[in-house]
Length: 152
Image 1 (spheres, rainbow, N blue to C red):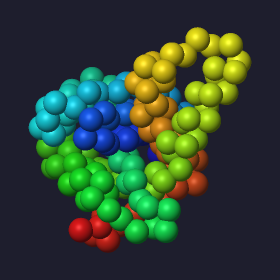
Image 2 (cartoon, one colour):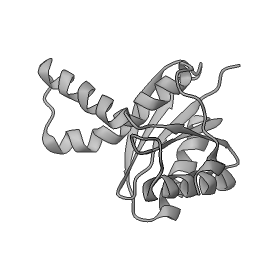
Image 3 (tube, rainbow, N blue to C red):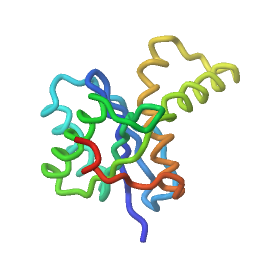
Image 4 (cartoon, helix red, strand yellow):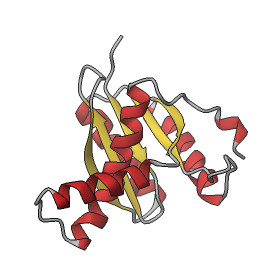
């Protein structure tokens, strides 16, 4: 069964969004939301979920390199739970430890390939590219959903 999936790299300042194709095979960067408030971010995301026919949401958890969690993970879990209850969609949490690094590498490679990428546009795109990186790994079966109860 295939389904349209939204990947979210949640942050207090910026939230990166990536969307899978209708077949649920390919993830692409979608947008970066500038956060005004948690409630406003969730409302914007619910509009996208409904407009794009999203059936499942994947939220990245910024775990520490040793696998432990800090305040950012707690905030991402709270965000995901609130989004699940307000959107009525299933929310899956995944480990996104290396997604920002992968996103930096992709953008740097595109710059070396001749694409004009300013520091400002790189910063704006980074979160959406990171969301696409972990969403693609999830779609490919390389990342499993994490049990949110582990993270208080």
